[in-house]
Amino acid sequence: MGFACEDLTTNRSLSIYSGWLEQHCQPNFRTNVTPDPSTCCGPYKPLKGFKNDKPPSLQKAVDVHSHDTIGMIAVDKQGNVATGTSTNGASHKIPGRVGDSPIIGAGSYADSSVGGAAATGDGDTMMRFLPSYQAVENMRMGADPTTACRKAIARIQKHVPVFFGAIICANHTGSYGAACCKAPGFSQFHYTVFKPGLSQPLLEVVDCL
Ligand code: GLY
Image (spheres, rainbow, N blue to C red):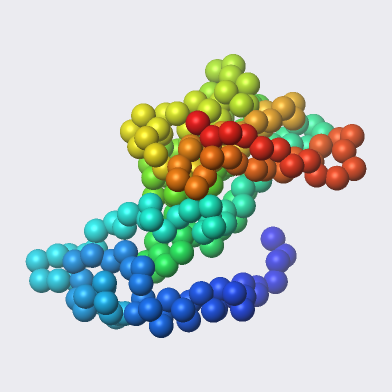
């Protein structure tokens, strides 16, 4: 797309990484490996009898301070819809972890005949439910954007009552909404809107379900 390759490491991310190394790589989500991941940094090998690590549970690692996914929905004058996400993933993730953000339908989804949606939060939970796809399909079936977002979150909550996550929705005419799941330390979700007639972005907020 013409963007120059650049190192996105910041002084802050470097200092978080150094602090993690100094704490003997804690928190650490590896299991069934040697050396003991609760006290040692790797390199790790699977314990005898295990082919590989179990998937991590990142619930503890993800909170309002550690989430950093940027999700966007753009609707142009003709009603064309585009969505995108950008993320650093989850803090202290295992190398090779793929979160929800790059997965179409999980991180975001767009269909210009309907609208778009983009999600943020605990990707290990959310990617199992394709919430962005679900929200767009909800709008296709007639739901307004707020209801479409709420239904997508509620569908996850049926299986995982408390998780960290939020979703934004916009239809191809420019109406929009959002929803989030109430979790410890997370009771509201803020998002920004820019639309014709505004001279600056509008900060919106929703109470979590
Ligand atoms: N939502 C970002 C991630 O879990 O990787």
